[in-house]
Length: 206
Image (tube, rainbow, N blue to C red; front, side, top):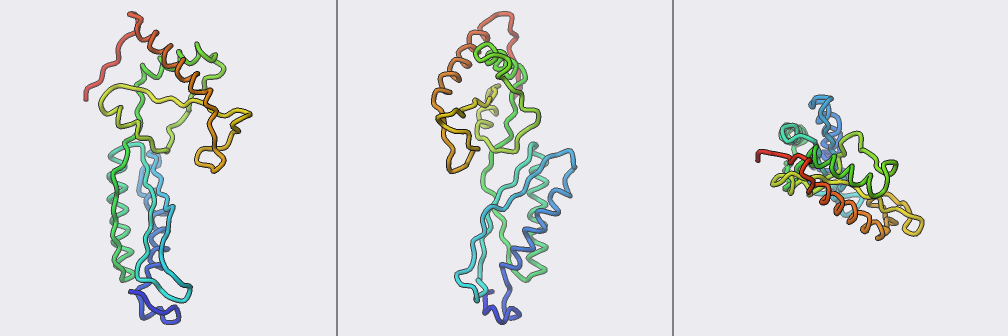
């Protein structure tokens, strides 16, 4: 319930409730998760209010919840709902929580990961191939393919003097398209190596 900024006692302030909700999510969702299980909650958008001296009737928060494990994700979603319900009761507001369809975690096939690593080393040299030491919390819909067939996703560097080296999602990000030729060579090399009879085929039950 909105109202005048000078009389907050006559309103149920959704901005104040939003502030409490964000703090509670950031504090309690990670604390309720095993420290060895990665979980990230980030609110990236807050929309509410039209003028500085009026308490609005509604605020919308948009964000992301990311985990590496489906069961951890399920428990985190339940915890978010419980926190929202508690904040709603304590502030006299109605908090509606909606989760859109999300991507699963990318789980590369170990054998195919080795295959791509060896193919990349043959194309660009072993010194130019780097292993990612820990899982990334970035979201990638390539995971949908891996729910049907064994596969592997690899990253291909695309920075250069001409394209620059801005980070992903930066407004100055650019791609040196010559990298695509390198990627094609790596994939072609992997196909050739895959055809060798001494290379065992991966198996997976789906």
